[in-house]
Amino acid sequence: MPGFKKKGSQTVVFEKAPVITSWASIVGPKEGEGPWGQEFDSVLGDYLYGEDTWEKAEKKMLREAVKLSLDKRNLQVDDAEIILAGDLLNQTVSSNYAARELARPFLGLYGACSTMAEALLVGAMLVDGNFFNRLVSATCSHHYAASRQYRFPTEQGTQPTPSTQWTATAAGAVVLEWAGVGPRITAGTIGKVIDMGQSDAADMGSAMAPAAADTLKTHLNDLERLPDYYDLIITGDLARVGMAIAEQLFIRDGLSPKPNYSDCGVLLYDEKQDVDAGGCGCGCSAAMLCGPLLKKMQKGEINKMLLVATGALMSPTMAFQGESIPGIAHAIAIEN
Amino acid sequence: MNVDAKQMKKIEMQEYQNLVDQIKPKPDILKNSVWAFMVGGLICGFAQVLVNYLLSLGMSRTDAGSAVSCIMIFLAAFFTGIGVYDELGKRAGAGSIVPITGFANAIVASAMEFKREGYIFGVGARIFSVAGPTLVFGFAVAVVVGLIKVFLSS
Amino acid sequence: MTPLYMAFLGGGLLCLIGQLIMDLTKANITPGHILVGYISIGAVLSGLGLYQPLVDAVGAGATIPLSGFGHLLVQGTLKAVESKGLLGAFSGGVEAAAAGITCAIVFGYVAAVLFNPRD
Image 1 (cartoon, each protein chain N blue to C red):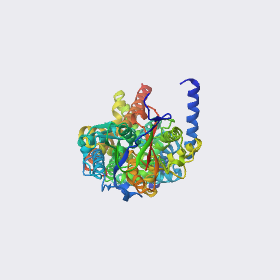
Image 2 (image 1 turned 180 degrees about the vertical axis):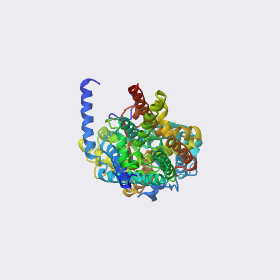
Image 3 (image 1 turned 60 degrees about the vertical axis):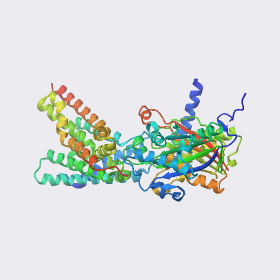
């Protein structure tokens, strides 16, 4: 029997640990005004980015983030052997159309807001499995493009609730290589789709928190680790409501990740920015990872990080059919 | 799943719901209510000023009503277009949804949003995404009431 | 003529009810649900003869909320049934509400053509 790299029930451990050699982030104006505005590679002045629709702007953000991540390492687009990307829009159009212009082999992924971790997980397996030497994992989201698909037209006078989250306008791209200098992806846990019957379209945090708790527990069990193995355990976009619930679930599972636990959705914006519970969207965890978090790892401020990106697999069609909102979470361990 | 597992899952979901209910912040009902009352009241009060003015010009009650509806719809369409109505809606909630201006806002917002998909199947079709269901139910009830009246009077 | 404060109070209260429906129920109540609910309930109350007294008391406070639009449709229908019989049941409502519906669609279309959503 070959030496499988799976450990425990859902976790994979990478032998050679693919290296994150470069990364790039592009964010919208609101994200630029947030507490981490200085940490992103590029902050857009408006939501159209020189295009005529929000969807096209989102596509351009993804394309430019991929290019920028390669450019920062003095590489060309053609040096990426394959691109893994996904987004929130129907048929993952932003990724498909960005890939059309990048003209590289492409695998489209969908994991709602967990897509960054999904793309890194699959990417790390492809590199560690000796299939590819260098690839790019990327994702993006656009507030207004997502808003009109999932919620209401932007000019409609609707009242947010305290649990409403703000979809981030952001894109992040990571270059993964077989060898090089940078933080390494050492392990990953593929999450299960978990649905605890939540159906409030204005509260994604509660729909996703059980998936985050399940994936974190499984990850730690599979690797026989304690939460304090990591300097930082960070969930994707649970935001304030989901994070508070997740903390309760962690305690129920016998884990106490505090004080080294946080959430990208809580961190991305300032509370004064009128975002209610916090941020969400593929771009939320992608921008935090490809902005401040990997920078902190590079500087050695964080040495072992576990990103548990969460996704609410919501569909307006299924919601109309009376279905609840399933959640998913994937974890990737990044270590220096 | 067997019956026991289903039962377990149900209990687990109920327990989770309890946790969510405990943690999830409630909307500020008092603040929202005051906003809804004030904004709704002001919109209707303003309409009343217009009605009274038109009546003083000698217009019939029915015509004055129709004319004021048109003016209110026009104003709502305009303020939606310049991006003010949705800002009001964030605070006022039902105060800016329930009046006919809210109906106009829903129409314009959906139409405007899909302009980039073209003027026929973008604007033309989406204009009815909220107005459609509203008119369907209004018409349906009106016809039923009318039929009952026909039946009773025959 | 209805005094201003009555219209304010009436309209305010009708909106307050809508707000409480949104805040106190768990289900996902969207503006669309509120609009459909108001027009339907207004029409039913009007059919039962309960809406007209409200209009008499608070004027625009009852005609401007969307329940007033339902009332207008039903009153138009009832009046047309008296003069035209069965045909009136199908034509009266839209006739009475024609100005409002046409304005909403035409102004809506024009606004959509002239303005862009935020960018």
